Structure formats: C-alpha cells, structure tokens
Image 1 (tube, rainbow, N blue to C red):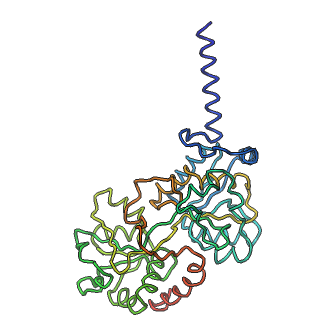
Image 2 (image 1 turned 90 degrees about the horizontal axis):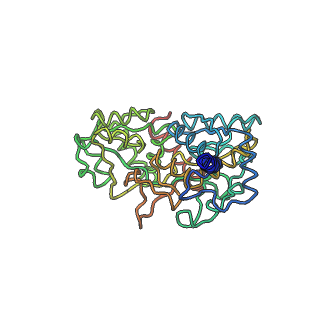
Image 3 (image 1 turned 30 degrees about the horizontal axis):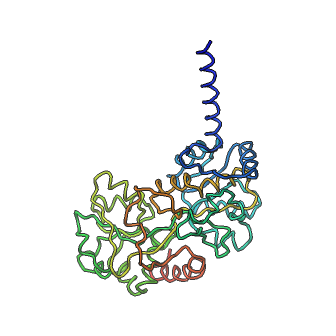
Length: 371
C-alpha cells in the first residue's frame, strides 16, 4: 500500500512538472516567463487554443524554432522557409489584399519600404509583455533595437559585423590583404567571386558599403576591373572558395562559411584596416502584418523570440550576435562580433536603410551594368 501511495505521489509530481514544461517552464534554470502576470497567462491560454503560429523566414530556422517553441509553449510552429525576399513579397501581397496567412515574418527590412509607410504593419512593441523582455537590462547597451525610428514595428534580433571578404588560405595568404586596395593587385584578377551585387541580398549590402566607404571608382575598379564572377546562390559562392575555383569571395554568409570550415576547408575572414565592415541584422528582423490569422499565438511567439530561449535558438543557428545581453553562443565566429571602440556603419537604421541605401544601391547597379 505504501508503495502504491508513493507511486501515486510521484506520478502527481511528474504530472505537475509536465504541465509546467508545457506552459513554458522548460528552461527551469532561467524561466523566460518569470514574473508574468494574468494578462500573459490569458494570452498564452488563448494562443494554445489557436494551436499554431505561422512563421516565415530563413529555412535553417525551421527545426530549431519548431522544436523550441513547441517545447516551451505547447504551440505548433507552421514554418514557411525560403528566400526571405520572396517571403516578404508574399506578405506584401497578402497584406494589401487583406488576406494575411502569415503571422510572423523574419528576415531583412524590406517591409520598412513597403508595408510600413502604408500603415499595414501591426506594432510589436506593445505586444512585448514579459518582464524579461521589457526590462532593458536584458538588452545590449540597455535598449531594444529597432529598424524603424518609432521603435515599434521592426524588431532587430541580431546586430553583427558583415562585409568581410573570405579567402581560401591554401590558395592565397590572408596576410596579403591589409587594405581593400590589395584586392586590386593584378594577381587577383579573375580570382574573385561575389554574391550578385545587382540584386538584393548580402552581395548588394557589401557593394553598397564599399561604394559608400571607398567610393564608386573603387567599386568599379574592384568588380569590373578585377572581373568578379557573380552568383545568386549562397552555397555555390562558398563552394567556389572552398574548392579554390575563386579563392576570394564577397557577400558570403557566416552560417555557410562555418559549415564548410567544420568540414576542413581552409576558409579565413579578412578585416582590411581601411574598412573592417558594417553592422547588419541579417535575417533577424521580426515584423507582423495587420490581420494575422493567429494573433494570440503571434504575441506569444514574439515574446518567446525576444526572450533568452528564442534568441539562443536564432543566434546558435544563424551565427549572428544577439541584441540580448544574456545570450551567450560560443558557436558565433569572432569575425562577426562587433569590436569595442570601432565606429561601424549601422545599415539597419531607418535613415540608412530607407534613404541612403536605395540611392547607393541605384548607383551600384548602374555602375555594374544593371540587373
């Protein structure tokens, strides 16, 4: 009898623990919902009744987001992975037609130029409900980062350095590049490839940075004078460098760089002394169109994404530095970490993204021969 009672007691304890995990207590050592009030519990209960949240973003995030959010909330993530610009275009069409099927979109800042000025985005800031999300001490420099000047609509989950060239150190010496001008040496002609700067993406960001920082004449000398080969395939670009086909590449993504480095390919990042890169938020900018189909689940996802577990999942997968101060992901390579004392150009501020970047991009596209 005593044994049966003990087992019953143990079952009750385990059952309570299971309920706690389902409600979001999976991170027992650091409960991301700590201090939440009745308003949060009501939203969470309503979200669990909705049963799912539809999230669109980079394909690599599908598994970590689906697993993590389900574990912490009991809510399913229906993840739409694909090119983020294509997903943004879909959201734009749906929002204009008042037929939104996507709850949350993660990617770049395209919506700042489309949905935002039309008033078709739902404000994110008022939906930040949890104490460990609203308290600024949990964020880098004591503030949340936004793409829009209002600080309400486009939440930046990461902030990291990009613009670094990658070289195959077996084919060319990383020590040979002290300045961007070193890439203009005759021996590198025909040995450089880039993500196509004439189309949106990481290649265009690097080219815009070069044009803004070093001038359009330098841009032409590099891309045209050195006969840079273009591709719009991120993986092909890395493979070219890894196999030495084009031992110098521009506009690569660190997630792929590190994947190939783990396989033993000799890839090294370069930080030229006359231009060590610029700040981006990569694929991390969260936004929500008005009329999303699962509004409560969307609110819960927003808070989870802005909390430690969501930011850890993002940062560990995309290898981008989180804007949360309490997220430590040793997997993130050192060449993307902002260095103290360096005055980086932040390209994910509204002034640059909406006003300067389009003008610079037009000049870049025209200089390099159109689309």
